[in-house]
Amino acid sequence: MPEPQESSREDLLALVALLRAERVEAASQTEALRAELGENQARTERLLVQIGELTTQVQALVLRLGKDSSTSSKPPSSDDPNRRPRGGSSRERSGRKPGKQPGAPGAGLALVAVPNEKFVIPAPMACACGSPLAEVPVTDERRRQVHDLAPQPAPVVVEYAAELKDCPACRKTAVGEFPQGVNAPVQYGPELTTRVADVTLGHYVPVERSTELVSELVGMKVSTGFAASLRGRAKDLIIEGGFITAVKELLAGAPVVHADETFARAKCKITYLHVACTDHLTLMHTGDRSAKTIDAGGVLDQLSGVLVRDGYVGYAHLTNVLHAWCGAHLLRDLRGIYEADPAGQLWAKAMGDTLLEAHRLATAARDNGRGELTSAELEVIDRLYAGALARARADNPAADTAVLAGHARTLANRFDKHRETILRFTTNLEVSFTNNVAERAVRPVKVQQRSSGGCWRTLEGLAQFAVVQSYLSTASHWGLTRFEALHRLFTTGPWIPTGLSPAAAAA
Image 1 (cartoon, rainbow, N blue to C red):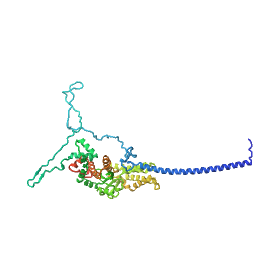
Image 2 (image 1 turned 90 degrees about the vertical axis):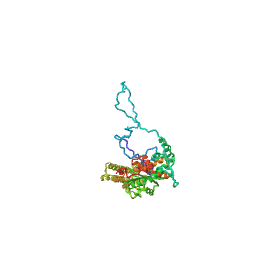
Image 3 (image 1 turned 45 degrees about the vertical axis):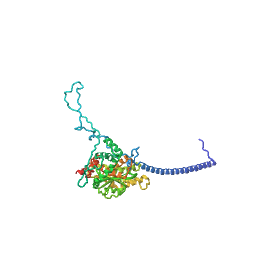
Image 4 (image 1 turned 135 degrees about the vertical axis):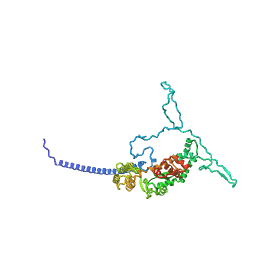
């Protein structure tokens, strides 16, 4: 192995210079890399801020665009017809198959014991084998019945002729007295009047179509003016007969009353139809949405029990009652918050599950004939409720300025502030979880409005509808058909309930 040669001084100096140059270049590259790293970190921070802002905007858009009848208080009529509501129903599947359930009574036609006509079909004179049957006695028969209508009868015209006599003493003319209700030279009778009213008032068919339908069914043409006048006539008979006064007095003494309001278009303006009702009584009136109009119904300001309603602040002035909020509205609000950010708003799902569990416990208690929940059940509900609120505060701190966080804090504050009102159905089992009783009661105004071109021509027409629908709705809850209720109205006067329910009236 050769011995290493000693480097000269010049070589060493050159090597040192080279090393120094490499160190300077390495230091320069290091500084460049540090500067580039700093720029990347700054760019990353700006991107993270931008992503946060965009995420906030997306959540706000999802919250706004995702609102439909399943995630807010918007009515089902406002839903896009091309897509189903996002949230769907909160009801759990029962596990039953669609259609008639085993053991349920049938609703088909049944043989009647004594038909109006009977045609006997004789057995053949001979059997298929050739044996004669003429002398063989009948052992049984197979019955088949056809249920049908008699041919359309011709209209019946009854004439009342009041005799006139000239008094020989005072020279005045004495006239025979016409029966009650016979007021004009030519008029429609109560049977035809009831049928037209049943189609127009009871089934929300527009006036002209109602006259056509009645003409096709009974063979008698009536004028559109006559059909249009029936709602006003019915309203006057209902009020003068004392129905409205009687229902007001009954509702004022009810332990639980449901209230709601919905808008309607009348005379090209927005007005509101208000309802106060129970399972067997309905009373409606019209006006704006103010507290004064709410009191004008003459029911809610006279109550002393529980008022089930939604969260509309217009009812807050009613301090004479205990308030209960509709659980269905609250579930929709919670679903809207949760679906806007499922990972960040778990509290909303937890609170929704709490309400559903409380509803399950209350329903089970009622089904078992219990008058209240046990202390253990109430403790479970309170613990779940408090836990959901605590998670809401953690998920949405005051420092979070996002739109969704603001909505979530507002909703959580409502649950915190109105806890007793929201859980009223758990401390008083007479109170239902939802306000569906009132929402079903106001639905016909939408049906009538849609079938009649989307708007009421006059405010008076809507007010008349409110009175007539109060009468028909109440009568139907007592087992009367619309036809029966209207027939009584146009003959002997309005039917009037005598208690809070048929069972209470019978007792």
